[in-house]
Length: 437
Figure 1 (cartoon, rainbow, N blue to C red):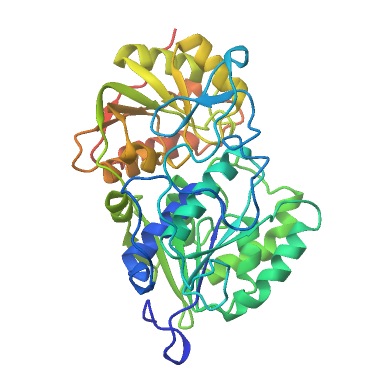
Figure 2 (cartoon, one colour):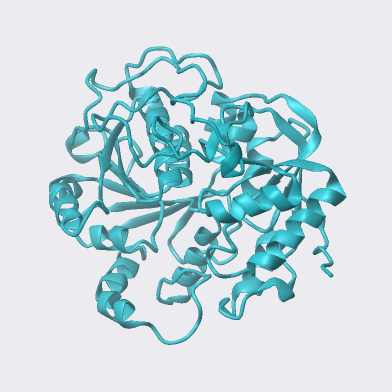
């Protein structure tokens, strides 16, 4: 099917399901490559590199968004390109209102900006409960509106009955959609929605390192399970959901009735038969943001490996402290899933300025200011930042995870998978694992 042709010559109706800011960013990258933005009668955008305006989806301010009014006292302005810094609670002030940089001109498709079933691209946000993720998602949703796309915000986890309301409300659009774009094929929510759709075109956009595992599992015909889940027998919930997961895997397998595309900046070494792999080079990000102002120092990128139970918290803190000291890092860009207690401890024991970005790091770095060297542990950003920052002279350096840092609950696949993330990264400088006392 042509990217622009749906039934009876009409433009393809595309529904995109996202649950994280990075997934939404990559939907925008995919749509940019497809040329969907060219089909909108949109007003000129605002200043290049501007941040999104305040939410306009009818939901009003989000009380769970820590970067909006009523935010937690531990979040204060850092002055670092529109991000927020976490400082010890005794030193915190009041949080700034969102947005923290001038908004760009709102662009809408069809004039009203309300979700429409006939829109060429409707982005459905299956909202999580994590406050930091919600905050970034609202800002990314505004960027999607600025591009002329429609955004439908679903409180998919807002209580016991929320899933029923969400699925019921999406059943009609799902059946009428010509194409489904998804950011997380491992998501049980997305897998359930896939059982409803009749779409002939399915697109999986990047969800970071999970994309590498998804493609490999699909190629090997394995059940879909996240790489950091501990090996062993499936639990009761896994068994209960197994028929839905199996159905989703079958739908994500190309056939005469269905086309499957993977849009990714990650290395794909095992391509399933019939799956089209399209490279994501962050062309939209580079066109809309930057180039950034480069500072002389080094910045560090945080990871949620402690929160997912892969890396021991004490060992991680020691590694961050020693790495920052060795390379002169002054700022630590926190992952949105890193918990506040851990970040307070990092700030107190390492002296690093802890920054809570209000957008995915690829956009924050491209907008600047950013250090001449970016230090990271194995994660998605060692693949994405070199693409987003191409031509700027910024160096990305990755530090290996020492096997001794892993917890006893880490998946047996964890060390090999993390090493693979580093081994396959291009245009990065590899650092040896930090030797801890």
